[in-house]
Structures are given as structure tokens and as C-alpha cells.
Length: 265
Image 1 (tube, one colour):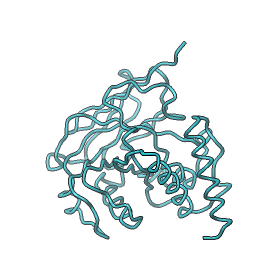
Image 2 (spheres, one colour):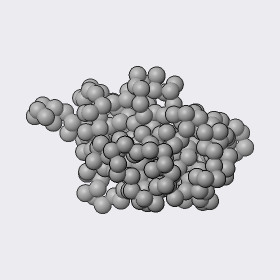
Image 3 (cartoon, helix red, strand yellow):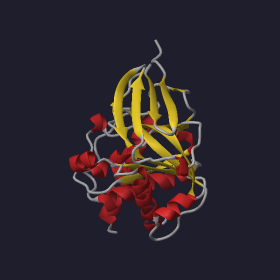
């Protein structure tokens, strides 16, 4: 890596780090870096910094699992970001205003692992054996990039536009589920705002999880026992506002709620 490239990666990481710290959206980083390798290198710099600060990693999130979104951003594969313990919100607990920059929400299937996934190439059987259970989830995504003016380079560098996440409380073994056909409905105080099925997530949420397992081995950060994996959106992302309460129901998994606190007077 050249000194010029290294400086550009550092500058991109610093821009995003400042936006995370202040809650003030920043300009895109695509003026500093190009290509997915550089974007993941920036994400890696942010990860290393947060780990040094003591943030506890608890899993990964998968993004860009919708073919339509992939076409929009000009890519043909998903992306990933890190999950940390301080990103987890208990079901229904109020999320403070401003906790996520430019917050939006989407409903997903979460997997929790009981075994490591360290093979260069995993089979579906490997994944099924390694998964302890599934849960319904709402991911509260956010972007440090002003006005969500993102390309794939921007979102990957920005930890795949991660924010917070909420898990349901009733674990369900995979043998009891047909995730491909599982329907999802998300409502805002009773009004339907997003619908979808497991098939919207790379054809099956387990397809996304397999992609992630293989990819993380190539990146030298394999998935480990205890990790939570957010497998990707089952339906369209929705904007959120202070005071919103979102409830997502996924067939076979039950429901999960994300509540957003109101702005103080």
C-alpha cells in the first residue's frame, strides 16, 4: 500500500469517526477512496479503533441482500458490518432521540450461533449444525453520510450503515422454520409500512448467512460461537421519527418491537 493510499484511508476513517462521535452527518468518502478493498480497509480501521476502546464485538450484519438495492448501487453481492454489544437494544425499550444518525428501520431474521464457522467454504449442513436458534429482529440502520448520499464504497466504509438492533425474545430452532416462505409485516402503530418474505433476502436468509460465513473467513475474522448474525432485510426499509413504535412479525418467529423516544421540549 502506498503512502498516498494509506493517507487517504486514514482520512476517510477520520471523517467517519468524527461523524460517529458528534452525530453530525459528513460528506461522502468516495472522494477519498475507490473500490471495495479500500472501503473495507476503512471499515477495518474503524473496527480496530473501536476494539481498542473496549467495544465488545457480538456478531455481524449483512446488507445489500435485495437484488433491487444491489442494482441501484451497481454491485452483485452483499456487504457486511460489525455488531457490538452497545448496539443491542432490548425488545420494546425506548431508543433515545439521536441515538442513530438519519435512522431508518428494516425487519430481518437473526441467527445466533453455537459453533464456530471457520471452513474456507461452508455447506448448508455446516450452517444448520452451527446455528443455535433464530429470532425476529429490527435493524435500526443509520448513515453518517449526509442525506444518505451513498455509493457502495460509502456504506461499506461506514460499517455497512450500521446503527442499533432489536431482537425478539422467543428463540426458535431452524428445524421448526421455513424461512424462505416466512412472511413479514412491519407496522407503525398499527399502520402497515413494510411487507416481505424470506425469499427477498438473497432467495433465502440462509443463503446470506452462508455468504457471510465464507466471506468472514477470507477476511480473517471468522464467525464464532455466540455471534449474532443479522441476515438482511425481508422488506423495504422505512424512515423513522421520534415517537414512532415499529412492530415486525415474521411467520414462525413471532414479533419484535422498536420504540423511538420523543424529542425533549
